[in-house]
Amino acid sequence: MFRSNVFVHLVSIMWRHSKGHRGRVVAYLTLSVTAILVQLAIPLVMAQLMNNLQSLSGAALASETKRLLLQYVALGFLFWFLHGPSRVLEVGIAFKVKHAFQDWMMKRVTSLPMKWHKDHHSGSIIDGIARAVYAMGEFCEGGFELLQMATRFVGSIAMLTWFAPGIGLGMLGIALLVAFVITLFDRYLVPKYEKLNYRYTKVAAAIQDYLTNIGTVLSLRLEKRVVEEISTRTMANYDLYRGNNTVNEL
Image (cartoon, rainbow, N blue to C red; front, top):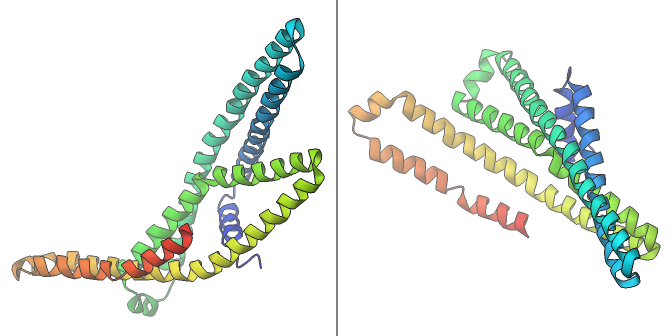
């Protein structure tokens, strides 16, 4: 089950290629989670403030309001004190993971026999490596967003269950159902995106062929024909592209 999960697969690749920097990975994860938990406390302070406005008056109200507003400001500063360094660490680690991942892919490609290289177009290989490295970098740099969603979800459900167990458990059940449905959509979409990426690599291979032989293209005045062919090949992917994104947005 975990091998087929895209998120788990990407996390395992990130962890594998962060060798030598895993202490920093743990550090930025710890800082990020702590920052998000601090952020989750801010609505509680505001809720207490609203409650005091209804139940207190006079000096007691003024004293409690001052205390809660100071807590609100302090929590805001504490959040950024934790979140800022965690993002700096995360972006730095993302660059190193991307670099290590690119080195690993290049070592694998260059270790393959000549027969394999003859059967696979260099343009497709270049485009495939570039896409994989870029995607890995984007995942590592944006990991805090996924972590934020997960921590907020767990924290919100925990607080809701504490105050209203029935409602909290009900929301947990609904969330698990939604997660299951999303998993079903992923199982449908992942092969479609793989097919689309494969087609894109074929377009990249054609572009490289034409640019490699640009002298011949220019001497035979084939510029317009070449541009039209590349455009036709690209637009041939539109239906698959549109279908994937339509399902993804739904």
